[in-house]
Image (cartoon, rainbow, N blue to C red; front, top):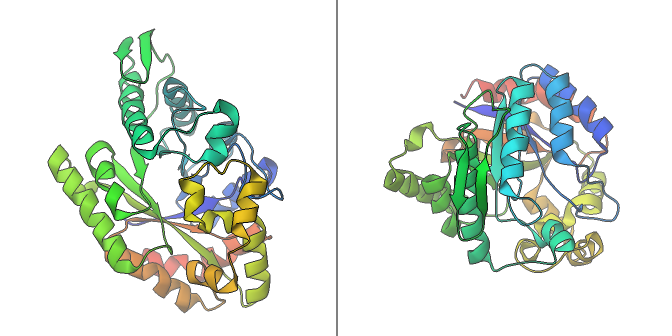
Length: 332
């Protein structure tokens, strides 16, 4: 069940370069793509294309690699019915090579265009209701929906997905992972931010939620994004990561009303070299990368998405595909 994926970076690269990256990833042994869905990047230096347009283009330019969001917030700046339609369209274009990763959002993406930033508990309730609405539309039936946050009247998708799109729910801490098991078809999280026992506790909470919902935990995807850089030039790797992604290491960015790239970058200034190296494996030794990934496989994760901030992504994809992925595939 092990699946090795590539975390693509709309917050760093323009969509034309991302297309070349996904083509290279497919050619070099990566089996799945995890694409962020951002309105704003983490830094003023970054990019932020419309991910759903890009996923359609990627579907047309690839033939085997799985495509999905990691993650999208299916409410606030979106109506969940539009996310249902968008994911169904990508699935149709890709012949069923599609999953949908969802979460409770970040003010960076939602507040600037809605002027709203509800409490975490309210956003959790909105996400759960959005998931129910999305699944109902994927049946192809005409839907009347009366929720606490969303309503539909005789809404119907006329272009249906080619697969039963699995929904992965994001969790960054064990306390919220139960929802992924209870309401989701899988989990998606970020590696490098917790100690390994905490990730094991997270998976235990997913299992508990799945059992309570009558789901088969063993068949559920458990995905983790891993920051890596396949280089011996530590200074260059740290500089590139901090330029585009430092804000992503600040927990406050996921909770508080920090809503511009400039605000994100300002908060990210506290991220030093040591903090980056604690979250990102920087090494040109393939054995270290294999061992780094293996600890997550041993913990119970089934889907690994490797994310590099290197300027030359094609070089990273080709060398990682040659030196690291084959050994990991033998573990699956």
